[in-house]
Image 1 (cartoon, rainbow, N blue to C red):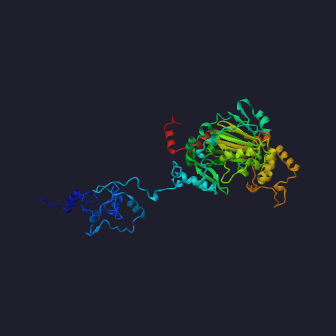
Image 2: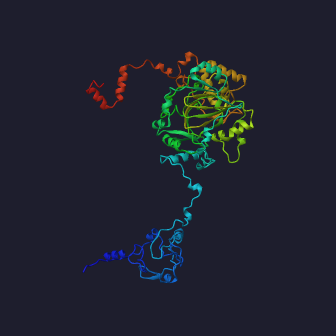
Image 3: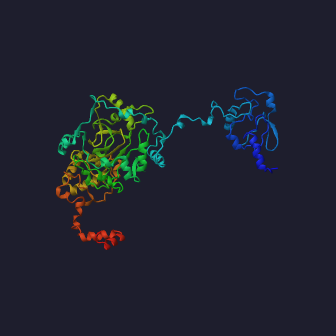
Length: 568
């Protein structure tokens, strides 16, 4: 008496059967025939074993031959075929999927379904090699990885970016915490406290004698001591690009600081990217860094300031070195001396006297196959080999901590390893202690710079000019403008042509008077720098200043001040 729709009949038939197969003991499939996607998702049926007429139960026993012969299925089109006959593989089927189906165990004899056993062999596609299974570093910003890879590819073309951590120094903390063992060959770098010395005492005992020293408690009152942490710098210069490397052609590779800070916190490289920014004075975005520190008063000289900043070689660097970064053993350019102040982190230094040979202090002949000579490798195994191979070599070593400044005299070999994430400022200078050496090298290696320097000596520092000319006469050296056109020095460096033109002329306003103590007479020092603008007259009257300020204010603000004089 109840009219049943075809859909209701289908639901009634499905209620009598299991979802994907017949009832227990039945040989017919009623209702909807499962699609291909459904077959892939469900466990393998004991009655639909592919490619074999032998079916195993969950207990491992064989089904009887009578049972196998009577097992048939009816497809949607009405055709009936034996379960024992192999099913034809679809043209789009996956061999790996078929293999996994054939390896799954069958259900029990009564037709109950069971999940595939965990003992089944995994698919060959899922097995990964150890190198592929290694997880890469995950950065916070989505673009950090791309920026890091770009700079790595540009800096080192001899290795792939994925090989920057092949020696696994990130897991070898012992290299960074290894104590320095002092003996007759390895001596500590001398240390003094700033409160116990004066600038004159420092010059007499260390600068004039070209002896390295670490001075403690020099910059405890600098704003940089609290403003140069990685987090604070990220807040101030988040979107400013800093130089983190150079490519083979000398092009600077820059990275926004937010990406570099992300890299510092998560990097696992053996020798990470080292931020060395030379453009502190010229870049208006980062010039504020110069307000966070001051040149220590024990370094009052900077005679290369007689050359304007556009023509002067780089002399000041703002540095951020992640732990395990550093510099290999080298000497500073043009024989200049250097001071280096650490505000955050810790550095390990090694120094050799100027007379030591380059081959001995670098130790590249002691490298073995497959080894590298980065800073961390140098301090790990290369420096011990150098000491063993050259027992007569005197080695100076020491640690530099926050608030301390190290003095490195000119022509001294030195190398650095950052034991922690380190922030520092360093500057090279020329003074009375090393002028002869700096002038001798500059006139050969940087001819244009030497000519501009000599010309300004004659104009503003006549005594220094006579000193330089006496050295030229003693060595029979002819300057660039004194030689015939086209004649070059046989030992001149290729960098001698990298400077401003000879036709450029420096005015007194272009020169920085700071650091010229002892070189420029007092009457000339007042005309340098900002002192050269005194010819413009007295300062403007307060009325002119008020009118100029009002012209730059917003109209709305000026209206409010007129309506309410008390606000003004």
